[in-house]
Image (cartoon, rainbow, N blue to C red; front, top):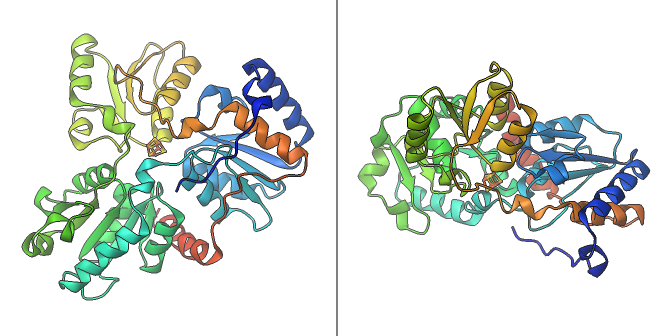
Length: 367
Ligand code: SF4
């Protein structure tokens, strides 16, 4: 969802980065008892240096929910993450996003309207007898509205660290599973569970019955929505082959949002937290090529000078939408708070929040 970000004005655009940082520090000191700054691993260091809490999206939302004495949760991440924080936050807390254009293109690829239409088509042709026959699973990188759709049908959210576990639960619960919105996390999880390839179908948005015949749909066990992360799509099998030739003792670790042909060549795969932990726990002198967002890889390089750490791809793989959040936007938000004005608040309607929380709680019960 693209919300309209206010023009900060010439006063802010003319500031130099050092001045911006100094003014942010002053505001943080002034507002210390009211604010908590949360930063996703993919934010640039310019913002990350101000984080009270850092982590992946779900960890941040859950950690923030434990801090109830700060009124304002400033979420340096993207829109769906701020929504999750709002769902899990105390009712008096407000979640603010530094820049309203910080969205996730992958989350936006699965609108509730399109997902409802897909379910209707499957019902109409008898692939499902009722709307709950097809167990929906959504990656946490999805809108609150889609999480609510899933919660309403007794499905579950999953993360990049528990995708396999949640998919296994869903396959035991129903005959078929619809996995949203990331094709690759869904495919990688299904492959890890040994679901045969011909029972995993890619649902093509905009095509009737996702582009499939009734026979192939009847045979399918897992339907994958055709969403993807444009950052993780940039990693290719050739990148791994090149690194292995250049550095035979290098270890390749990638995020499971990468395509399956990349994942099968890697030594390890895992969530951002798993990648950080693998690097942290490796001995000095270890060599790594990492397939995930460049800001995290750069940070690992700075934190571990005793290890050789590379981005798997040669070109920059940056989450450009998350990068809409810049230090100047944080300063603007803090200046407004100091003046008693709340800007860029992300709220989830209570009906949606209740159902979305149900799908999140289901995941916690599975995990
Ligand atoms: S890295 Fe990919 S999945 Fe994550 S927020 Fe950016 S576009 Fe979305």
